[in-house]
Every structure is written in structure tokens, then in C-alpha cells.
Image 1 (cartoon, helix red, strand yellow):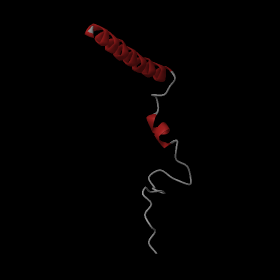
Image 2 (spheres, helix red, strand yellow):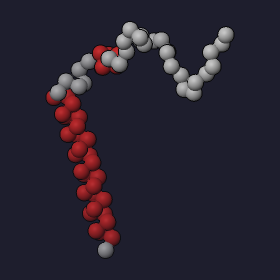
Image 3 (tube, rainbow, N blue to C red):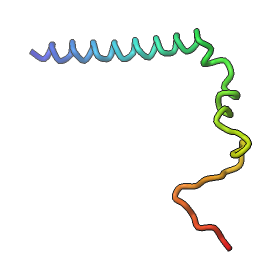
Image 4 (cartoon, rainbow, N blue to C red):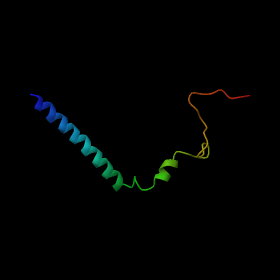
Length: 64
């Protein structure tokens, strides 16, 4: 009876591994792995430039 569990676990592990391999293949075909620098800095703008921290958690009071 435990062979059912092992078969199910094997199928789930195979499905997860296959999904990960397909995601890596898809990302390489669609150019997601080409320019890491541009992707890493795409969230910054003039209001929050690269290398300058403008927010904090938890919020620290400003010194007068």
C-alpha cells in the first residue's frame, strides 16, 4: 500500500522539476537572462537613485 504514496511523491517531484526546467527554458528563449544589470536597476528613477536609501523599515525618527 505504501507504493501508492511513493508513486504519488515521485509524480509530484517529477512535475515540479519539469516545471522548473520549462521555466528556465522559457526565460532563456524570451531574453529574461540576457541583461541582469538593466533588470536590476529598472526599479530606480530620479526620485530614488541607485545607491541612495530613501526609505527604511522600521521607520526611524529624523534627527532635528
